[in-house]
Length: 173
Ligand code: IMP
Ligand code: MG
Image (cartoon, rainbow, N blue to C red):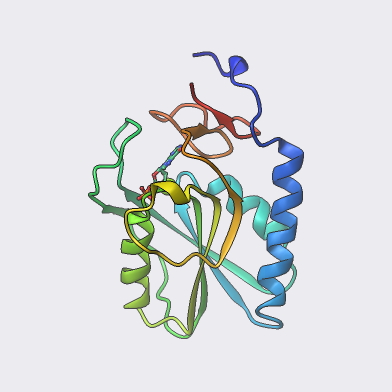
């Protein structure tokens, strides 16, 4: 399906406005702290890059790649670390930056492995949440948008590695 045929579901402006709010909220909750943001590749990359540019104060970043899905639209329930972090988390205020929480399996697993690395604090920011799909109770501190059970693409999110470059979020029919 050509990109142009996917209309905006969450517009570029709506994303920008909400992410600016989230950045302010995250900063308000950690005044004066240096925050270490962990981007979950590849879906979280647009969210991270806009989030950090909207955030005041000291921020550092690291990147991790996980795999819970094949190239389709349903969860295998299996999570693998494809690329680990470059830096340890000991003593840091860590914020996981994820594109979407769906069943919650990926995030739950990630929180477990990062908590074991002794961060000073560990919080999670997800741009999107599909609560009706949850298979495990996972805590998410900051959510951009709560959506129905629809498969969305764009702004980092893919279907079979396509559509990540859309500047908005659309629903894949
Ligand atoms: P979970 O483990 O089921 O919560 O799935 C999390 C991962 O599945 C996300 O980080 C996404 O990479 C992918 N995913 C879940 N729902 C969607 C969607 O609607 N569009 C694109 N990717 C999705
Ligand atoms: Mg992801």
